[in-house]
Amino acid sequence: MKIHSCRTLLILLRLFRRKIHPWTTLVTAGCKIIYSCGIEQEREKVRFLIATTKIDFVSVYQFLNDLLW
Image (cartoon, rainbow, N blue to C red; front, side):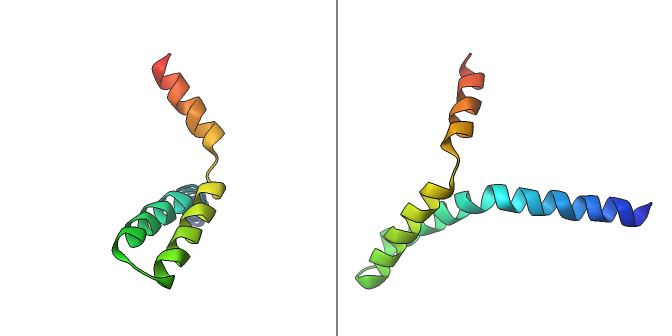
């Protein structure tokens, strides 16, 4: 019984990490854009844009719509 609950917990943690990872990348890349310069800043801009493409904004808009109505 304990092994089953441990596996379930690991699966839930993996799912949570996959859902939250693009948001953390977006925040860290945004901060690095502000504090870096030169080629490193350009790399962070690319990383920021890639992170925005990985986020499912349709579900975010649906969530906001549910909150408003």
